[in-house]
Length: 223
Image (cartoon, rainbow, N blue to C red; front, side):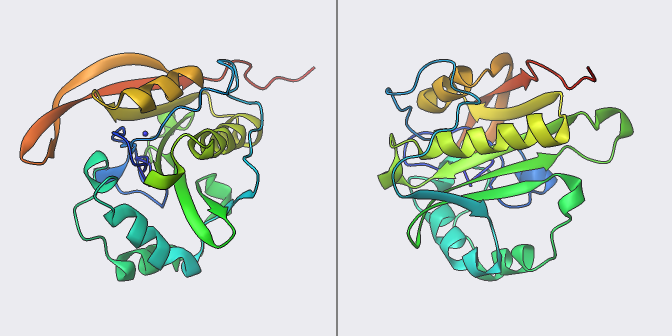
């Protein structure tokens, strides 16, 4: 789940990929975010939007806000990012013209001009036999926890994958102690498939991760 893709939030998160284009070393870690108890358990595709919340694709103008979000002490440890995120790094990433036909998407959530969260949907590599698979990760600002931001971002990625890309399998990794993120992913149809021991170093200790995946509940077909 930090921006994260891994997912970013102020509660323990999953090692999901940040919401910006990922590299192999940061592809599936999610930062912690709180579960919104108001949502029903079957809301993976039901559009959810808190008042004032807007979603859009990330752009060059967001580099500074993304760097700040990923540097938060409540967010960074729950991702695969190293401390002291660099605005220049994100400017280089976001300055590249996105390949819209790749299907990859970095989605940001705003309340006015304030960045509340980021989520990324990415391919898993160039293997032809894995073209049906994508990975995701998220990050949510600590002060935006429990307000539907993580839910809205995840729903946006799922709709992109299900309705426009025909993705059969969505997968992610999440730290085993990121209980809130795990609960949200399960509510969105993800299932635990395994445990990766000593997956990542965090605060001087190795931490296990869970691998989770969701299969398209109604794959595209021709009537």
